[in-house]
Amino acid sequence: MKSLFPILFLLLSGSILSQIKNDSVFPDRGNMKTSIYSAFLVGYNFSGDAKDNSERWKSGQMHTIELLYAKVFKYGGPHGGSKVYYTGSDLSLSNKYDFFVAPKIGINVGAGLIFGAEIQLQTNFEQFVPRIMPYLGLGGWGGKFYIGYNFRMAKAENLPVNTGHIGLTWAIIKGKDKNKN
Image 1 (cartoon, rainbow, N blue to C red):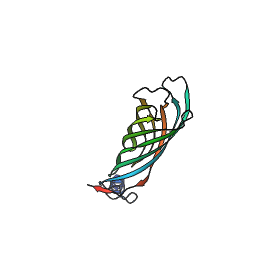
Image 2: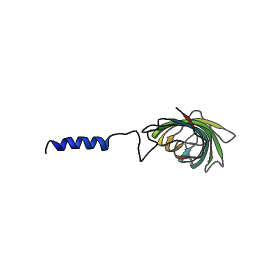
Image 3: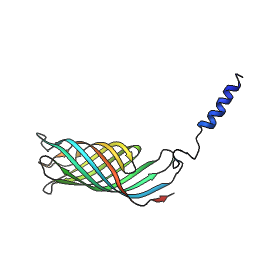
Image 4: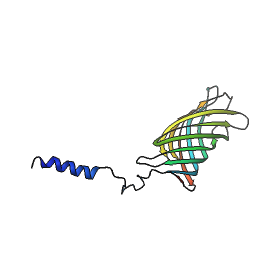
Protein backbone atom coordinates (compact mmCIF):
# COMPACT_ATOMS: atom_id res chain seq x y z
CA MET A 1 0.00 0.00 0.00
CA LYS A 2 2.85 2.42 0.78
CA SER A 3 4.44 1.93 -2.65
CA LEU A 4 1.09 2.35 -4.41
CA PHE A 5 0.51 5.91 -3.09
CA PRO A 6 3.52 7.53 -4.86
CA ILE A 7 2.65 5.81 -8.12
CA LEU A 8 -0.99 6.95 -7.93
CA PHE A 9 0.13 10.47 -6.98
CA LEU A 10 2.43 10.71 -10.02
CA LEU A 11 -0.20 9.35 -12.40
CA LEU A 12 -2.97 11.61 -11.13
CA SER A 13 -0.84 14.75 -10.90
CA GLY A 14 0.51 14.09 -14.39
CA SER A 15 -2.96 13.75 -15.85
CA ILE A 16 -4.59 16.59 -13.89
CA LEU A 17 -1.79 19.17 -13.84
CA SER A 18 -0.24 18.53 -17.24
CA GLN A 19 -0.29 21.20 -19.92
CA ILE A 20 -2.67 20.61 -22.77
CA LYS A 21 -3.08 22.48 -26.01
CA ASN A 22 -6.75 23.34 -25.48
CA ASP A 23 -7.69 25.30 -22.42
CA SER A 24 -11.35 25.36 -21.38
CA VAL A 25 -10.96 28.55 -19.31
CA PHE A 26 -9.00 30.50 -21.97
CA PRO A 27 -9.79 28.78 -25.28
CA ASP A 28 -7.66 31.23 -27.31
CA ARG A 29 -4.54 30.48 -25.27
CA GLY A 30 -3.24 27.79 -27.67
CA ASN A 31 -3.70 30.10 -30.68
CA MET A 32 -0.24 30.90 -32.03
CA LYS A 33 -1.51 33.29 -34.74
CA THR A 34 -0.60 36.95 -35.01
CA SER A 35 -3.42 39.46 -35.43
CA ILE A 36 -2.77 42.87 -36.94
CA TYR A 37 -5.32 45.65 -36.67
CA SER A 38 -5.64 49.43 -36.58
CA ALA A 39 -7.05 51.19 -33.55
CA PHE A 40 -7.99 54.66 -32.39
CA LEU A 41 -6.66 55.32 -28.87
CA VAL A 42 -7.72 57.96 -26.37
CA GLY A 43 -5.81 58.73 -23.20
CA TYR A 44 -5.41 61.03 -20.24
CA ASN A 45 -2.07 62.11 -18.72
CA PHE A 46 -1.41 63.98 -15.50
CA SER A 47 1.75 65.80 -14.50
CA GLY A 48 2.21 67.76 -11.32
CA ASP A 49 5.51 69.52 -11.88
CA ALA A 50 5.68 71.31 -15.22
CA LYS A 51 8.71 73.60 -15.25
CA ASP A 52 9.97 76.24 -17.64
CA ASN A 53 13.51 76.31 -18.98
CA SER A 54 14.90 78.29 -16.03
CA GLU A 55 13.22 75.96 -13.50
CA ARG A 56 12.75 78.93 -11.15
CA TRP A 57 8.98 78.62 -11.02
CA LYS A 58 6.39 75.95 -11.44
CA SER A 59 3.60 76.48 -13.92
CA GLY A 60 1.36 74.06 -12.07
CA GLN A 61 -0.35 70.83 -12.85
CA MET A 62 -0.85 69.74 -16.43
CA HIS A 63 -3.79 67.74 -17.70
CA THR A 64 -3.26 66.26 -21.14
CA ILE A 65 -5.63 64.44 -23.48
CA GLU A 66 -4.01 62.25 -26.12
CA LEU A 67 -5.57 61.17 -29.41
CA LEU A 68 -3.71 58.46 -31.30
CA TYR A 69 -3.93 56.24 -34.36
CA ALA A 70 -2.19 52.90 -33.76
CA LYS A 71 -1.16 49.75 -35.59
CA VAL A 72 -1.43 46.84 -33.13
CA PHE A 73 0.37 43.51 -33.55
CA LYS A 74 -1.19 40.97 -31.18
CA TYR A 75 0.87 37.80 -30.76
CA GLY A 76 -0.78 34.57 -29.68
CA GLY A 77 0.55 31.77 -27.54
CA PRO A 78 0.26 30.67 -23.93
CA HIS A 79 1.34 34.09 -22.63
CA GLY A 80 0.71 36.30 -25.67
CA GLY A 81 2.08 39.76 -26.18
CA SER A 82 1.79 42.83 -28.35
CA LYS A 83 3.69 45.51 -30.19
CA VAL A 84 2.02 48.87 -30.88
CA TYR A 85 3.19 51.61 -33.24
CA TYR A 86 1.30 54.89 -32.88
CA THR A 87 1.14 58.47 -34.02
CA GLY A 88 -1.06 61.30 -32.81
CA SER A 89 -1.05 64.35 -30.61
CA ASP A 90 -1.36 65.50 -27.02
CA LEU A 91 -3.71 68.40 -26.28
CA SER A 92 -2.78 70.07 -23.03
CA LEU A 93 -4.09 72.67 -20.65
CA SER A 94 -1.85 74.19 -17.99
CA ASN A 95 -2.20 76.97 -15.44
CA LYS A 96 0.16 79.36 -17.25
CA TYR A 97 -0.59 78.62 -20.93
CA ASP A 98 -4.14 78.27 -22.11
CA PHE A 99 -3.41 75.59 -24.71
CA PHE A 100 -0.62 73.77 -26.51
CA VAL A 101 -0.24 70.62 -28.58
CA ALA A 102 2.42 67.96 -28.92
CA PRO A 103 2.41 65.88 -32.11
CA LYS A 104 4.15 62.58 -31.39
CA ILE A 105 5.17 59.12 -32.59
CA GLY A 106 5.90 56.12 -30.39
CA ILE A 107 6.15 52.39 -29.86
CA ASN A 108 5.52 50.02 -26.96
CA VAL A 109 6.07 46.29 -26.57
CA GLY A 110 5.20 43.81 -23.88
CA ALA A 111 3.03 41.12 -22.45
CA GLY A 112 1.31 42.55 -19.39
CA LEU A 113 4.38 44.62 -18.46
CA ILE A 114 5.09 47.10 -21.25
CA PHE A 115 8.10 49.18 -22.19
CA GLY A 116 7.83 52.06 -24.61
CA ALA A 117 9.15 55.38 -25.85
CA GLU A 118 7.79 58.33 -27.75
CA ILE A 119 9.14 61.47 -29.39
CA GLN A 120 7.07 64.67 -29.16
CA LEU A 121 7.28 68.20 -30.55
CA GLN A 122 5.52 70.30 -27.92
CA THR A 123 4.41 73.72 -29.17
CA ASN A 124 2.21 76.67 -28.28
CA PHE A 125 2.49 77.90 -31.93
CA GLU A 126 5.11 80.50 -30.92
CA GLN A 127 7.84 78.18 -29.63
CA PHE A 128 8.46 74.47 -29.71
CA VAL A 129 10.55 71.98 -27.77
CA PRO A 130 11.30 68.42 -28.91
CA ARG A 131 11.38 65.81 -26.17
CA ILE A 132 11.70 62.06 -25.75
CA MET A 133 9.85 60.07 -23.12
CA PRO A 134 10.64 56.46 -22.16
CA TYR A 135 7.94 54.81 -20.06
CA LEU A 136 7.11 51.65 -18.15
CA GLY A 137 3.67 50.34 -17.36
CA LEU A 138 1.02 47.68 -17.48
CA GLY A 139 -1.07 46.86 -20.52
CA GLY A 140 -1.17 45.42 -23.98
CA TRP A 141 -3.10 45.41 -27.26
CA GLY A 142 -3.19 49.21 -27.36
CA GLY A 143 -4.25 49.89 -23.76
CA LYS A 144 -1.75 50.96 -21.14
CA PHE A 145 -1.37 52.43 -17.66
CA TYR A 146 2.11 53.89 -17.41
CA ILE A 147 4.56 56.28 -15.78
CA GLY A 148 7.17 58.14 -17.80
CA TYR A 149 9.80 60.85 -17.62
CA ASN A 150 10.27 63.50 -20.33
CA PHE A 151 13.74 64.51 -21.43
CA ARG A 152 14.10 67.85 -23.19
CA MET A 153 16.07 67.66 -26.45
CA ALA A 154 16.27 71.46 -26.95
CA LYS A 155 15.81 74.58 -24.86
CA ALA A 156 12.78 76.83 -25.16
CA GLU A 157 12.17 79.82 -22.96
CA ASN A 158 8.87 80.08 -21.13
CA LEU A 159 7.47 76.82 -22.51
CA PRO A 160 6.65 74.38 -19.73
CA VAL A 161 7.69 70.76 -20.05
CA ASN A 162 6.07 68.22 -17.80
CA THR A 163 8.95 66.11 -16.53
CA GLY A 164 7.28 63.08 -14.95
CA HIS A 165 3.75 62.01 -15.58
CA ILE A 166 1.22 59.22 -15.19
CA GLY A 167 -1.00 58.20 -18.08
CA LEU A 168 -3.86 55.93 -19.04
CA THR A 169 -4.61 55.06 -22.68
CA TRP A 170 -7.28 52.80 -24.10
CA ALA A 171 -8.37 51.65 -27.56
CA ILE A 172 -11.91 52.91 -28.18
CA ILE A 173 -12.24 51.95 -31.85
CA LYS A 174 -10.68 48.75 -33.15
CA GLY A 175 -10.32 47.97 -36.85
CA LYS A 176 -10.81 44.63 -38.56
CA ASP A 177 -8.35 41.84 -37.61
CA LYS A 178 -5.93 40.69 -40.25
CA ASN A 179 -4.56 37.30 -39.20
CA LYS A 180 -0.98 36.52 -40.11
CA ASN A 181 0.42 33.05 -39.58
